[in-house]
Image (cartoon, rainbow, N blue to C red; front, side, top):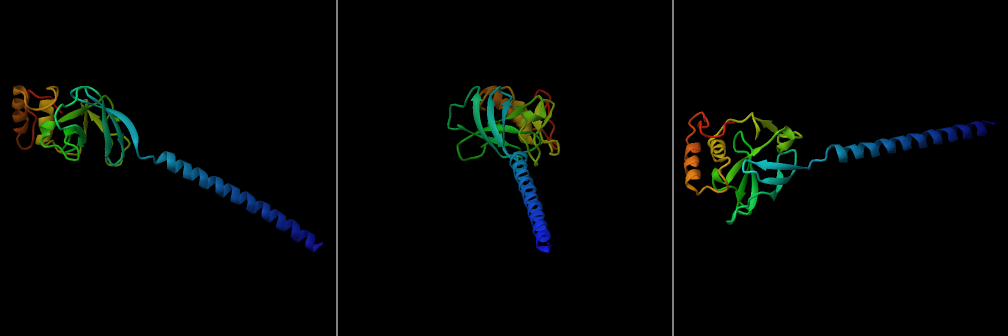
Amino acid sequence: MLVGVMAAQSSQSAALLGRASLFAFIGLALAGLSTVTGCKSGRERELTDSEGRRFSAKCERSGDCTLSQVAGNKRSDDKSALALTRTGRLVGICDVVPGHGPDTPADCRPLVCLRDSDCPPAHGLKDGQCLNALCTDPAQALVPPDSVMLCLAGSGLGHDLAHQVERYALGLNCGTPCRVPAPCRQP
């Protein structure tokens, strides 16, 4: 009789242990699934610059993005690659020589937006920040490269035309602290 009771208890223990193992397995599987889907670091989004060009961007929450142009005018010189810039308050897209950074802030144009999801993320956040229809990092100070991008916004690509040279000089002379000159787009 004692053997029968012990066998029954052993059978119940095995069943409980089997259920516990099953629940533990399900719990681990769900935790793993939520980690894969919840912490997915890259997110595809479309970015637009002040020249109306559109870009496909796969961005990490750290702010690193892989960019490709999907619409709009392209540079016809050796600056065929793209780079994201966050020199100061504004976020911009720069035309660069492959493997290099921008030669000058005049190679960059600010990103425009309607909502936060139109801006690349940074600082571990899901989205960037859209303020006054520009992608910004409001914690940063306005600096001369920001002023240059705002003065060149809407002037077309490059920086060699007479009106672009004038706007570039205007943007560089924003003072200390930097204040974007009145004729330029304001932050």
